[in-house]
Length: 343
Ligand code: AQP
Image 1: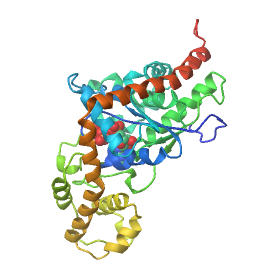
Image 2: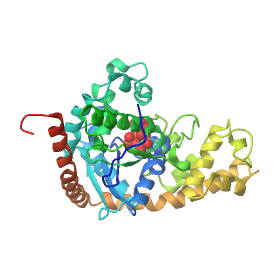
Image 3: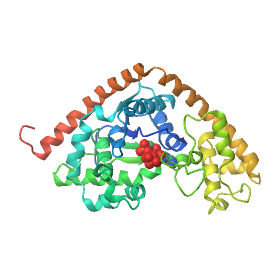
Image 4: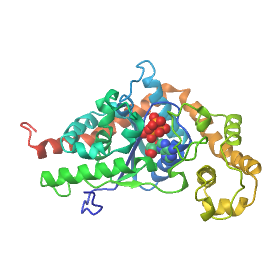
């Protein structure tokens, strides 16, 4: 169903989001936030804190607003400039929920049933999961397409959801005879940070919900904690190989090399060239230095932004109003296209 060709001629626009569901980690930073900051120089960017997605799993009403500010602070500390990009929280813009309902009527249950992230998250407990968690990728399509966004910077885990967004856009355009109304959004997934794996198991993605804190580097970890977690990261009995080919079948090592490359802004090949034959002790010490150097300024800036919640709220509210100005006319057009009375 997915078709990468479209004759959509609207403006290029970037949209992405992060859930306010806990402390952000290095995977979120390399897979998403770092790219957010880079893209704002070249394109119109809209970055959302997806609190509607967060409530697909129960969130404590007493902490949700603070968690949202926490993500906003992480965006800003990672270099997103509110004068260049919109940073707002999803629930403040009604277009998301409205379009999500229309898309629930466009998406097919067979498509949603194929989403592996839902299956991974719920395991054997699918019947106890919320309906919202099941239709999460449909809301994600609405988030993107409410802005007719053309590009979506995400980690590799989101690739399948992006394919669903394209299928929904295409089916809407076909069903209603509006061939170029919605663009087919493209994922921007590249570089060694696209899939950061757990420090305790190189076959599992680094994740906020992993019960082991040692499995991830949090954006709030200080230099000592970062160095300790890297020192304890799982490796094997060999040493650092010389070629990419020799990394195959060594997921823990490949992960550390990928993290090094992404943080130092060099290629994985260059990391191997610099450290081939090294034992893991010295390699991890070098990686810890690179990680602390890259992460310390972010951690520091984050605490400064968090110290002024009123300013964060001003930024979020102002951007929310601007986001609604873009999305509301698009959703009003959708109402007309569907044919509602009074639309
Ligand atoms: N390990 C990762 N490597 C690269 N990118 C990643 N992302 C998440 N984990 C990695 C990217 O971060 C962005 C925000 O994702 P989210 O807020 O939707 O959270 P998530 O993907 O659900 O993150 P977690 O840590 O995996 O949370 P839990 O444990 O709750 O499921 C997205 O662009 C994502 O690709």
